[in-house]
Image (cartoon, rainbow, N blue to C red):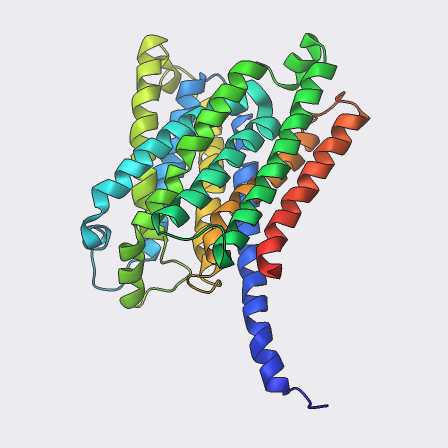
Length: 358
């Protein structure tokens, strides 16, 4: 029997190791995103629209801008980089559509809680955000790598659907008083509609990232580290989202006469709210910083690269449900409901493994 070369074995193991490193980086970013709604619970005396706008300024402007500046090649201006390829306004436009998703995403948390709200919204976002770019590229989803991608996304959607079913069981087994205790403004039907809308429009974030491919290629050609190359594109998408969310929140401030939130509270409370909004924004941004860094370890054009968006969304669902359990949102749901929830989480984990196996 012919012996295998140790060098050949090492070369074959490198892509697998790189993929594992990329997955770990994305997972850390996902943990951050899934934790981002926890600091918001510490915000005091502000209306929903006020704290949503304030955390958005950090999540969609301050930290993305810092990330983009980190990726800026020496001797170049930020605007010069962002205008590469003439896609600037197209990317911002996708960001504005995504902003609708971000806005309704926050409302889905309000009406369904962290666990169920994120599960439904991110599940829809995962499917549309992964498959639409593949279709726009002309990929065949019924053979080769396209089929593997389709199978992986289908498994992810199945896992998220199971988690959604667990949420329905939870709702049917709890009294109105218990629902309100777990999630103050719990409203199942309204929450599901909003979560599905959030998922569809949130998928535009990945479309914006795809449209920004020329910008990413340009900064790579200028010597930027692959770990940071996606950051300028992320900034453009989040600026679009900020525009949509700011217009809505300022309108709600005017309608509800809540502009006083920003001026009438004590300095101590202001500092508390600003600190927790900044922390929430940083944690939220970490998912896309991690996505860009994690993708740099995947082979360009590979299934894992195409599936990375779905991986991020699946991990967000996984970790958000862990937070839901820790925050006792599933308390009193019953043993059957918990078993269904765990089964859904296991299916999500399988969906992440499948593309790498095949």
